[in-house]
Image 1: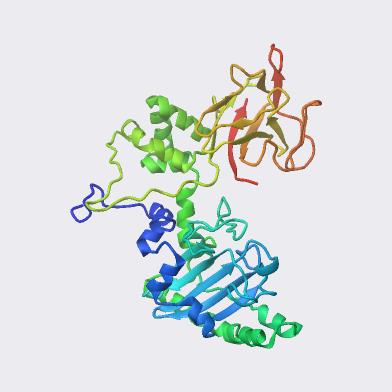
Image 2: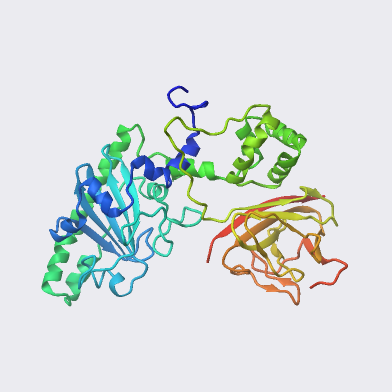
Length: 470
């Protein structure tokens, strides 16, 4: 406590793995500069000079696990080991094609790239990561039209966490395709062919270089007490811990956060009323997003577990950097209660962090699914960010109504791209709704009925709740 200047000098391992593996904390811990040019100066490497002297080693290929187009990786030596950088492209046309422009960057036979990723050894042999655009400016996330990380919700390659997951075994094998192409077509000038042969080593030579760098990284892991082959259910450990923290909370997980049983959580939250009662209802229906749960956590501590909440703090002279803005859509869906009778009409409430278009899907116990919102009574399904959208409401011209007994799953999907989701078609004139899952039309177990009044590529978020009809 005295050393840190805080009342509680401990942190959660999963929170730390989540926070420290992403910008801006990741860059601050490593002291990464604002530009690729400054990074070179800091590490004592001159990429341009090494290319011109043919001391750099390259491998280019059409497909990789991250890049959406052809990609070039390039190795340089630094005092701590290796400095690998990539050249990534937004397309494959003209000077974006390595097969037509294998030299450069720039020049008559030089490519024009759109960004890159750098991996370099730290003094202890472990790896650090850096993303930048074509100008060399640091990026927290790579554009998805250039690179993608399928393990992330928003598909973006995020500096730190994405690189750790991809390079958990160190440098990945790469088979160059450029040298053989240039040597075989014979339409390049002699000096270009010679430069390509000098920069692009034969595969056996490059394999040895990559294996040496991979062995250095694995040895560094062992020296730090980490098994290089350690993972959690097939996921790299930092990613696994990070994902565990980011995961939505159910009743059991929420109770564990407060250190009490599920039964005590349900009773105490219900008795507390207000936010607690609303939150426990949502937990009974399904799950709650991590950031939404933490927003309410401090205010509920005293009423839920009769304890004093100590807000996060740091010691003298330290600052806490704000998290990067959330780029994926978060959506919370709740209903008025979790149990209903046949003929009852549920009312739903949705809240999102981004403006989007809401689609509500009802899945019956047999797995048949239909869209119940939007519908012929309300075709405008746009909702505003950070605003509770309750439906049906007093202004609606329809009600939902349970027609049969069973357990119904209601899925909320919010899409920035447009009012209609891909593969879902609405025929409001005939009230037909395209089924999901089995692709056929299904009988709605939650009917959409008129009231006695006159009727008048982008990010996607999802949430689901279960309702019991007795």
